[in-house]
Image (cartoon, rainbow, N blue to C red; front, side, top):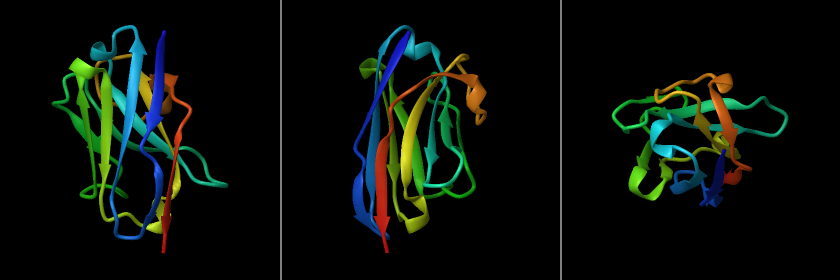
Length: 124
C-alpha cells in the first residue's frame, strides 16, 4: 500500500509560478515510476508529467513542456513539480500517482495509487 498526499497548490496570476509536492508513505516509493495528472472542471483527467524510479527519465505532455519540471527526492519519499509561466488553462486539481512499474508512463491504468489532489487556480 502506498499513501500519497499532495500539497502546494493555490491561486496564482497568469505568468506566475507554483511548486506542488507529493509525499509518499508505505511500500517501495523508490521502486516506482511516478506521475502527475490533472482534471479541470467538466473535463476528463489528463496526463501532465511522469518520472522514472531514479529520476533519470521524464516525459511531459505537450501542453506543459518547457514550463513544468518534474523531479523526485527518493531519500525523502517525495515528488515535486515546478510550474512556471502558468496559464489560466492550467487551472485544475492536480493528482500525483504511483505506478506499478519503475518506469515512466502516461497511461492512467499503469498507476495503482492516487492522492486526493491539490487545487491549482490561475487567474487571468
